[in-house]
Length: 443
Ligand SMILES: Nc1nc2c(ncn2[C@@H]2O[C@H](COP(=O)(O)OP(=O)(O)OP(=O)(O)O)[C@@H](O)[C@H]2O)c(=O)[nH]1
Ligand SMILES: [Mg+2]
Image (cartoon, rainbow, N blue to C red; front, side):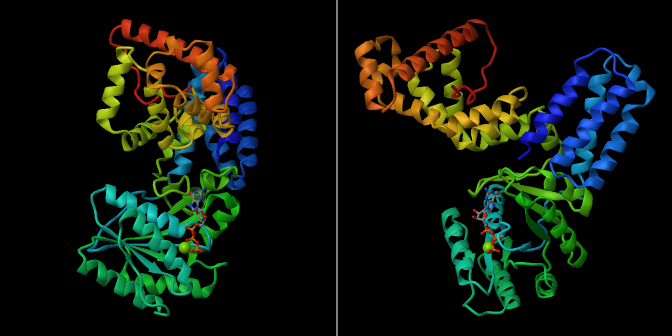
C-alpha cells in the first residue's frame, strides 16, 4: 500500500543524504517533494501542511544545517515526525473485566467479521480463552460466516436464535462466556451501509449493556480519505477506544493510514494485512514509519519468523547452512516456510536495504517463478536433490519435461544453487558469521 509513497520519499531523502553540504534551499526543495508525495498518497491536506511545517521548523534550525551529517539529521527528523503523526492516543489493547468484552463496530464490508476472527487468534496466542459472539441479528449468513471462522480456529461462537434482539444477544453471549470460563468476548456487530442514527443508538446501547473494555472501529483503508471521514463521524457520536485498519495489503495509496490518527485523535491498534486469520499486526508507528522510509522493519520480520518457523527446524537449518551441507531438498523446505510468512513483497519490504527489490520479487512470484522452481526440485530424485553434480544433460531434460518447465530454467536453477553453495562455503569457512535462517530460501 505504501510502495509509491515509499519510493518517492526514499529518492527525495536520498538526495539530501548523498551530499556534504545541505542548505536551507535544499531542505525547502526536498520538503516540496515530500509534500507532493504525501498529497499524492492521499494524505489529508491539513495533516500534510502541519507535518511539513514541523519538519521544516526543526530542520532549518542552525545546529542541523551546520552539522556534517545534516542530510541524515533531516531524514531522522522526517522519521520522528512520521512516527508522531501515526502515534495518537493510547495504543494499549485493554482486556479488563471478566470476561473482557471487545466490541467490533463499523460499516458494512469493512472487515469486522474477519478482524474478529483474527483478534480471537491473536488473543489465543496471548494465552487467553476468547469466545466470539455473532451480534448481527439481521443477517443469518453473518452468523454462519463467523461460525465457520470460529470452527477453523477452534474458538467457540455464541449464536442466538434468529430474530433475537441485539441487546439480548450480547448479554447472553457474555453469560455463555462466563459459563464456559471464557475470559474474552468478541462481539461481531452488524454493519450498516451508512452512518445512521439507528446504528449509533445500537452501539451506545450495547456499550451500556455490556461495558466493553475495547470498542474498536474497523475501517477499510482501501477507501482512502472516506475512511477518515467515517472514523470522524463515529468518533463524534460513540465512545471508541481505537481503530483497526483493514486491507492494508491492498493497492490503495496509504493516505488513510497516515491521516486517520492525526485527524481523529484515535489510536490505530491493529492492521489487517490479508484475508487469512493470521494476517493481523499490532500497530507500531515506528515500524511503519521505518518501512515507509525504506529503513526496513526487522522487528516485525523476526516476529513473523518466530510465529512461522519451528525453532528446532530453524536450528537444524542453520547448522546445515554453517556446514554448507544445505541441499536442494532443504531449499524447497525453506521456500515453503518463507511463503508461510506472507507475500514475498511484504517480507522483503521489511528487510533493511531490500525495500527497492520488494516489488520485483513479488512480481517474480506472481509470475509463478517460485512455483516453477518448486516444480523443478520436485521432479528430481532424492539423489539429484542431494547432489546436483549428477545432473547430466539427459537428467536435466527429463526434469524439464517432468516439471513442465524448460531446460534453460533447470540449468539456471542448478547454476544458482551452485553459486549459493559456494557462498555458503565461504560463510562457513569465514568463522562465526551467522546466516539468518529462513532468509536463504530466496532465489
Ligand atoms: N485483503 C484483505 N481483505 C480483507 C481484510 N479484512 C477483510 N477482508 C475482506 O473483506 C471482505 C469483507 O470482510 P468482512 O469481515 O466480512 O466484513 P464485515 O465488516 O464483517 O462485513 P458485514 O458483516 O457485511 O458488515 C471479505 O472478503 C474479507 O475477506 C484485509 O485485511 N485484507
Ligand atoms: Mg460481518
